[in-house]
Image 1 (cartoon, rainbow, N blue to C red):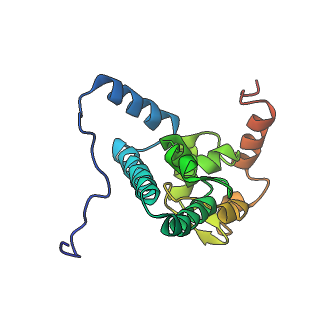
Image 2: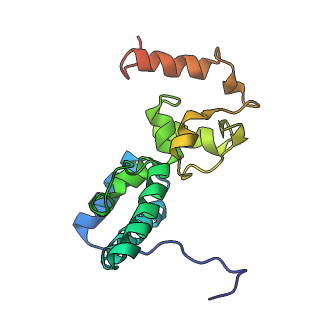
Length: 183
């Protein structure tokens, strides 16, 4: 069980740490999603393997238990925005690491056009400029649910809450020009 005062790892490292193809894939994902380090990627990969393991365990249950657990699991993943409400266990087993990475606050913020880059999105979050339902969220790895997605906005105490803020104008201008800087 362990000592409650000591922190424990929430991730598992790769079995072959120096596998070239695995290293290049990890590096590409870290750059694509603006992760700070590979530990963030490993944490999400562990979360995905846990989800898939639970899905496989549910497949092996008798039909009555399976239906209950499958329904509960799909409901939870639907709230997180990972699957459709009419999904099946096969849909859960086919989830990829990109599906989980797309639900991170940092990525959602960038995809909505509230930041120019993933790294700027991370900075806005850690500096307390982003709020969900009026509550500041300072964790870029926060999993955004479907309900949270509609309530995502700049924090009231942030200078970015003003629509005429230069950064917001610059981001909207970048959006209108299709990602190209005006000359």
